[in-house]
Image (cartoon, rainbow, N blue to C red; front, side, top):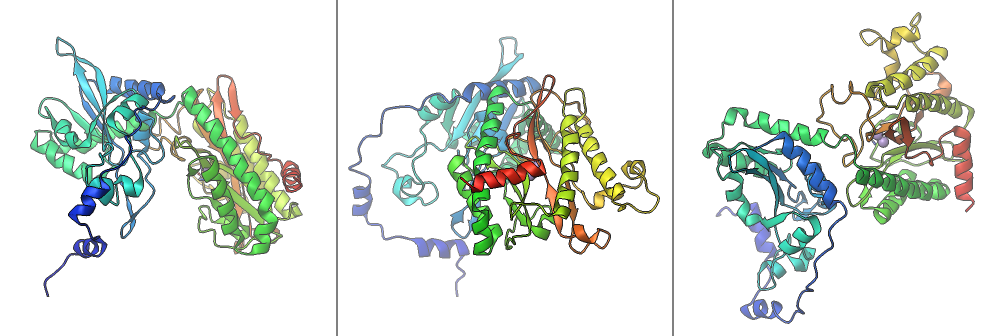
Length: 504
Ligand code: GLY
Ligand code: MN
Ligand code: MN
């Protein structure tokens, strides 16, 4: 039997009856498209400043920043599109925008041939006209199937940069490749990266240094996001406020989540509903962990029940259309009241968080926040007699030896937060962990204590209790502003919050 490829079989099965008559008929009889352009996006001027900063770092070089393409979920269905974070940051395009687009920062030169900045050009797939087959017949990109895209003029009006058809990108990308440096963001679109690698080498770029040079660009783009501009700070405030709506909806529904069974799924669904309604959706998979599940740090299966006596650890954040996301954790007694043992653990974590928060100020190092919080965690573990015999708080905090306390809090206390939940991840240790905090940075403060149900070294009363408290904090000139301070966090305040929300 002749071999028929999988792709061909799928295409054969999908093929629709298409007559010449139908093709002609479907393309006509549509009202003219509106002759209006979108307004200039508020983010456009901020995105232009970000591009200017990256332009300064790479004079005379072409910089290629792809959005990435659609990703297959299974068979012929794709995931909802999310552009690469660097692309979103430099263009201002957020949720759902624009699959397969590529931002090119094209180097400019003055009369003397010296580098003179860059021109931003967005190559993308513009709206196809109704005479095209794409219009009705392309299930992945066609207007009939997935909706209309912007035109070139729309994008130029919205973003204030030049736009061109993606069909022109391949040549533009390697033009003058022998004479100018070309760098690209490699992880946005693996296929495009492979194609361009070949093409760049053919055009004379040295293969050995190519990936290394690209990595420098990726690093700079990641680090560029570390100090948030005023527009970004407002996005973060809005994301945090939207997240509070989701948390309160969960609190209001806790009795139902207990009663229905499969309560973790219920909580995930309720938060997801409000995340989708308030913003674009969740910024990362929500952790809805009841009882012992809270001791699995990234419990995103959310398949469990919630019992009346459980704590429920909800680590969730709303992502806005701009892709900026909050990242908040509260650990809530499902019944509305902490048991004595739960409160004991909770209050220890609260004290650690207060110590961490107090360390968030310019002049302190990023790592000082963890140092302050983990000291309090270690002090409690020591006071409870959980550290090995003869080990003092100082002994366990010694980074060369000991570190016994990490059995009960293995994660760090903070990370930068923004378009990515773990933002600026490519910054170096010197720029991140060892760097001084500066106004405009936004980070989490999220200590925890985790006593697994089968942890024989934990006091019996603590087994099965996991607590984390996480806030999102802006570094200011003289300290910090806790953007999520309106989420109650002291144990009594959490109980009062639950009572108040459930009595509405
Ligand atoms: N939600 C993931 C984290 O807190 O880092
Ligand atoms: Mn976090
Ligand atoms: Mn979190």
